[in-house]
Every structure is written in structure tokens, then in C-alpha cells.
Length: 144
Image (cartoon, rainbow, N blue to C red; front, side):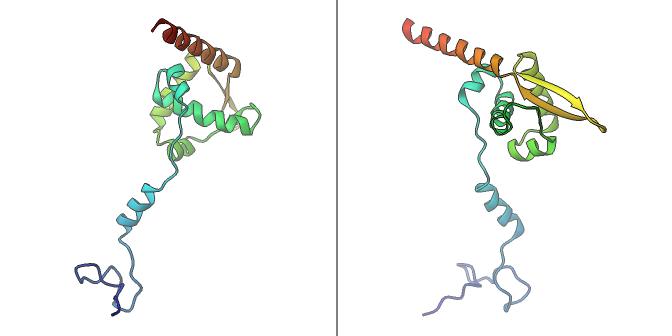
């Protein structure tokens, strides 16, 4: 017995211009399957508590990875990259960046013509915030 791979389980011809074409997949179905196996977004749990905001924690996690690659120098990350990598809209990015700047965890600067935005994590401030968080957690565990 042979199976005709051009037919679905109900005997319908799969998408294609003709019976002689190799079976294809509906573009929406293909996009759905590809999105299921897209790169996951990794957010450091401790950054969520330090930032108090999930979007800011996602941005900080992403920048910390990029920051290690560039030795803490100024980093340029186009908005479109964060839209693609983190799923954050331009407005969400601006809100997250503002949140990080207010907390003293991120420096921003405009350079060049046309001006481009560059970022740098304030590592001493981040370390201090993480240490303070560790002290609070320890105090909570001791008090229980």
C-alpha cells in the first residue's frame, strides 16, 4: 500500500497549483508554525523586582547581554531590533527606557548626524540595587 502525500487525511488535495506540484503549506499556517518555534524572550527574574516593570526588565536583560559583548561601552540598539527581539512597541520601549533612566540604571545619549540613540547600563547602580534586593529577601526569610 502506498500513501499519496499530496492529500490531507480527508482526501483533499493539499495547496498547490496542480496535482503535479509538490504539496505546499498555507502561508498563514506556515507563519503560525514558525512563530511557535521563534526565539524565546529571556528576562532575568531579579531584574523584574529591581525594575518593578516587566518591559523595563526585558530591556535591561537584553542590554545586559549586549553590554557583556561590548564591555560596558555605549550600545546602539535600533527600535526595530527591540520590536523584533522583545515584541515591545516603540511606545513600550520609550516607557521602559524612561523607567530605567529614572531608577538610575540606564544612561542614554544622542550622537551623530542624524542623531542616533545609544545606551549604557549603569553597572554600579544595578549591582547596588541587586544587593539591596538580596538583603530584603534575606530579611524576609529570617523573619519567617
